[in-house]
Length: 592
Image (cartoon, rainbow, N blue to C red; front, side):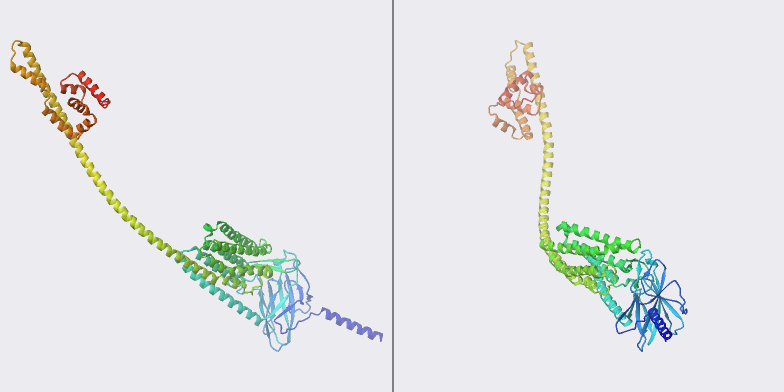
């Protein structure tokens, strides 16, 4: 009897040991997602699926430094009478290979998945598996841990099974949301590209870049670049708590799209409100803020995706804080422009309220939920944030065009008035020009007349000089006759003929004939009109001989020439000049 009890006790202990070492097999239920944390683990690069002696240890934390690969043996019970399709993923973004029996059940077929597999798949870590009806399904997962060995932390991945129908519905929803957003943004971008080519307005250029940035952002947020760009460029980081962050082409272009959107919004604000001229302080904040954010978003993105260092883990939070700050600057600038009554500022402020609120909400959403793993791609906040600016900003642009059109109309009226003034001024200029031409013609005629008079003056001057010489010669002849008569008197002193005495008297008294003087005076007044009248009016005490003497001085005859004309000695001429000069108050002091 004691031996029998001992036998039962040993048998019970063996059963309990088998129960402890046996791997539990979770069963499928109506729940859409099944998370499996209990599975067998084997260390190594290869296994023999037919080796019944192969021992898988119960699931526990796995070291990433002891091996390159782990094999996971997953048991799933399908109690339903139909085959069930599920989508399998791992909670950690590791590369893995899923092995399942083929349709015949004779061969094991492997399929690869993970970030390092450049396949045309939006979610590269997901594989479809079919769980056989009313049976225990065995799945083998070969997990590659080489990319996280440098971190040196342990991991405990969870195998996630999601109903394929639910995954397909989510995929369809994401496709529809993405297509609608991209088509709307593409149409708006195409229209504004057409407008920009025709108007060359910088506002439309920045608005166009906003649409391009929105397309980049939404496409990256929904992970569609994994489908469109089949490249295996990514960086991963294993955290001490066993969680993982990853940074792929979607995360990289997400930051680039955000930088394009925000920088374009800042530049659009500058151009629309003309802050460079009207709000220079706000303009500096907008300009430097745009460049600073582009640098802050781009440099960590390049450093992280290149694998140099996982910098995004430290900068993403402040990246979204930066977005909040710049959104505040945009709103502040709009309010200041509205207070300053800048052209169309009211419409721009109203148009930016909703996009700024949604942009702020998106930044807060990333701060609270998504940063820094980029896994929550099902939200529609990005689409709302990007699409919300289309209609309000479109209205603002139309309002701006209307305001500009009103300004152009006012300027057109001003231009017409200015043109009328210019035409009037042109007419006045033409009249003045005609008058100037008439004056120029008259001046030219006067000039020609003066030249003619000058020529006549010179001719009269020459004639006057000739007449003076003639008088001089005549007086000389008379003087010679007088001298000859005096010689006759000396030769014949006794012969006193009365006729000779009369001739001497005539020669002495009539040596300067009035007719000759009148002729000289006539020519002189032709050259110098009203000369004698003005001279007599100024100096009425002058005698006839003094007038004649001054006339000789006026035509610059020398003392000797005047002495010859008057038939007196040069000394007498100088004495007469002195007396005349005294009467005329030194008016002829400069004459020789």
